[in-house]
Image (cartoon, rainbow, N blue to C red; front, side, top):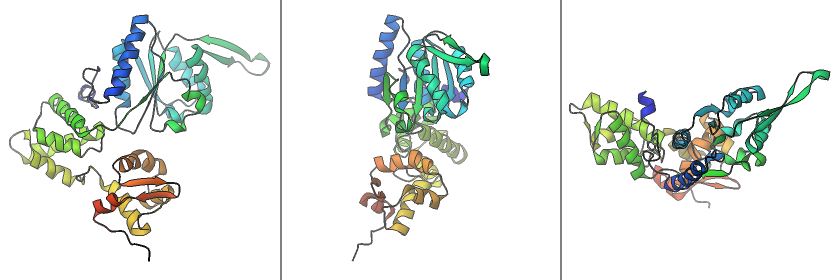
Length: 320
Ligand code: ADE
């Protein structure tokens, strides 16, 4: 229950993503005024920015139910049919990691999205016959960290495409303040801003760091107000540095500098050296390192920028 209440339920409660919010509010008002279902929505962006939360907000604002699932959870067309069969007019079907849908399931979605119907084959051999299966008008919300991995036919069936961006420090500060309030904790402004500064643009990380800082304050401070010094102490113990990089972020840069003089290094080499898989590096670590200007993508591989060298206090070996 606690977990649920730290998630905003309406746009009024939802911090950040201002442009996207303004746009969605227009489409929602228009759909409500026409008494229609909302057009299908594709939400993309790095993990932890609140794609699921945003979908729940959309459902609340549309006054409809939301069914939540994920690409890998829908293994067969039958699994999708069960979900579609439960929809009432206007309802939302939310599919997280939609780029991981099996192909046959994805193909069934095309007609479901476009015509609100699916054709299925019932029976086998000579007895096999197509059955037409009408659906109520519904809204598909698909979420993905990698829109490029979606097939073009699927991508083109979303009328609304929303790109979620990293949050700035002040927005993350507000997220922390809001969460603190939900937990009945007291946090000083400079402390919440410090967490915001070190959360790599991501509310999920801000909320996680807040919980750990709160634990430290509870144990090491008699008074229950979270101040800047306990916040910095806790974040240092957690290995989160001034820029919000965690130990894996720094390991990536270190490895590239020490063994490859800053690159270019291929993604699979980086992944193998850290015993992580390439998608983890690509989806979870790289986007922030690139956005912060520590790393660059080139046709020949990844390279550490001057800023990346400087951040680790290392210098580049010049060619002679
Ligand atoms: N918690 C996580 N993301 C949030 C957001 N965008 N607004 C408010 N609370 C949040």
